[in-house]
Image (cartoon, rainbow, N blue to C red; front, side, top):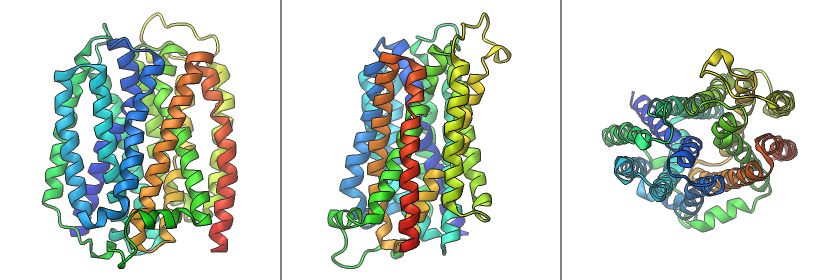
Length: 405
């Protein structure tokens, strides 16, 4: 019963941060319209969350067991609740930068704490993989809900209206409510304490130097690069390439989140019958095929006479389905590496996961924004095929290293 309550608390924490983190694509679109910033400037918002995630994770991951995972999540949620409550009053692009900085710092602690809690709340590799897919699936449910939540506050007649910032009142209440839940939820963290002399940044560096970690971290970097490149810029792609209205552009992006959520929640069933590497190889092939099939359909799309889902171009529905195939990659490779380590190494390895994931997200978003601005949305999305090809190689190497270990 105690474990069940802790699982609910971890899931809700992840959902809150899912909404906040993945609102960056929506905020980029709305900042361009409400605050008059350029695409390149708006695209830097990704760095304001991802670089703090990377730096904070590197500094605190190995020390987080001393602070306590439960306490870390309470602090992070309280920080986000207060930052979100300030947004409707500040109403400026510099405030959005500050907001995403706070999100990055808070998520650094939450990601390490949540993944480490999975190791405390499960007994074997199968249970670990199952709960990891569940938590990551619910993360995408939060992303899906976030797109629709934000779209409800966008003025359909005047998308530049800053009234959309009122959504942060709702997000503040969710964050503070989840912090209150953690404050009343017990969690046995004794199994996470590292042996004497193995805590600290040195522990992370020791893990990062192992051959299997090098291959794994390259895979995590490339995956997040692809996901953030597509997820962050999909609302803008919908608005500028497919000519959907602003609110519909955001809502259509929810298909991407829904596809990832469905893929992650159902991946555990398939992985009971199929080895993880061939399964992910097929997923990568389907991702590439969908890009090559869908992007030509986005050529020559003209603006709709009326904002009608029935009149929306086919590409608006097909391209986001790439999320269905990319969905299992991240939780599966994370579970593979964490299941191979003792529990007291989970915080340090998760810190490395967060660092390289944040760097991948920042790089992917910035490069896609640059290509989008200079060469157009279709070319920018075609370039996602390059990291897809490279990640196929890194996953092959990870499979070999895992078998050899």
